[in-house]
Image 1 (spheres, rainbow, N blue to C red):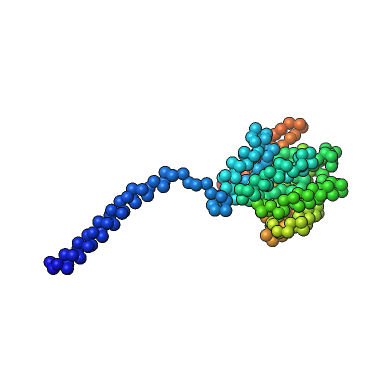
Image 2: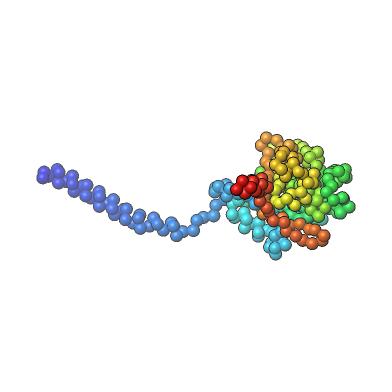
Length: 300
C-alpha cells in the first residue's frame, strides 16, 4: 500500500471517530425532551380544539363553582369557541359587570366567543325577560311573545345596548340571535315569530361594523310527544309521515344570509314541567327509521 493511500485512510478514520464522538452524546440527550413538560401556549399559537362549548355563569354558580375560575379552566382547554349568554333579567338587576368580566377575560386569553343576545338564552326558564318589562306569566300558553308591542321595543333596546357594548371586542366572532326562537319552550311554551327575529337580525347587522356571522339555532326530533309539544303548529301529521312541513329549521334558514350559521341542537334528554312536577323526556328513535323497520318486519 502506498504512503498517500495510508495517509488518506488515516484521515477517513479520524473523521469517523470524530463523528461518532459527537453523535453518542446527542443520542443520549435527545430522548430527554420526552420527559420535559410542554410549555403552555396561547390560542394564537396552538390550533384550538375543533369543537366548542357553551358556558353559563348561572349554571356554574348552581354547581357551587366560581364562574371566573371555571371560565379560566375552560379557556385553558383551547376550545374553538365558547358560547356565552346575555341574561336580560340579570343585566336589568345587576348591570353588565359579570358579562364585562367574561368578555374582557376572553379578549385577554384570545378565546373566541359567540354571544347570544335577545330575550331567550341558555337554560330554564328559556325566556329571561325582566319582570319590570313584562310579566310573562300573564301570557297564554303557546303564545308568540313578540305579539306584545312594548316587549318588542324593550327587547330591541336591550339588543342594541348589548351589541354596542361588545362589538369592538376582538374576541367576539359571532352573534347568536335569541336561543331556539322558533321552538315553543319554557313553562308556557312561548316562542318568537320570524318577523320580529328579522327585526333583531337587521338591528345587529346595522350596529356591528365588523359584519360578523349571525347564528340562529333550533332543535327538532326528540320523541313524538315532545316534538308536538315544542312545535308551534301543534300536531302535524305531514311531518310525522315524512312530508315537507313547517319546521324550526326551515324557518331559521329563511332568516339567514349566506355566511351565517344554522345551529342544529341535538338532545339526548330534555327536562320539562307538567302539572307542577319536573319530568325528563328522553330522545327516541327517528320515526322514518322506525317505520322502515316495521315495514321490514311486515315483509317477513
